[in-house]
Image 1 (spheres, rainbow, N blue to C red):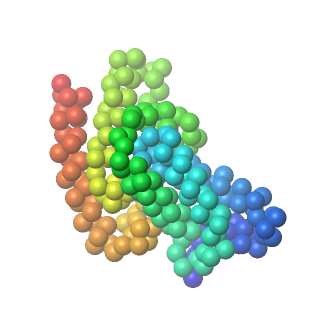
Image 2: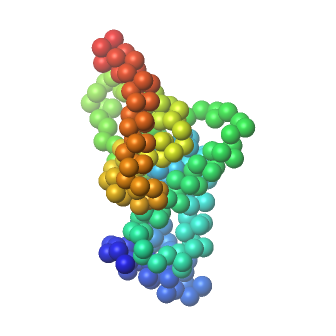
Length: 203
């Protein structure tokens, strides 16, 4: 059994009566809602789909939390469900074009404790702020052009800052697979972003 800082909270949910589960689960929701939304947004690419995937994630957690046996960290299980919900949603919607991407600034600004530290617009000037927002959207576009598997692994590594081991546990893949997918993702992102970065910083 793995040591897990979430264990007391999970056990409280598991011990709750059906009538009391909603209250115990609300604490769990408050603890994970930002991280789940962040993963779903980065993989789906827009606010509407991210909210749908996040809602599906918490629905699955609510229904299946009694089945969790601490054979992995609870956070790894949450990430796995969020990634799968996001990828499944995009697959179901593959017959339609994604209309538009919400800006990363809007997504991060709506959540406390955002992981990306961005400069204050008031101190950087409107032209520089506009360029930064454009660059953020280019980066998000590049992530969305990765395959779903590489997109998920990129988000967990560079947005959620998970270690290789945590990624392997979350996605139930080997460390070697983590490394090889990240290497392929690096190559793809380098091709996509080199001309973009050259334009922003050298142009």
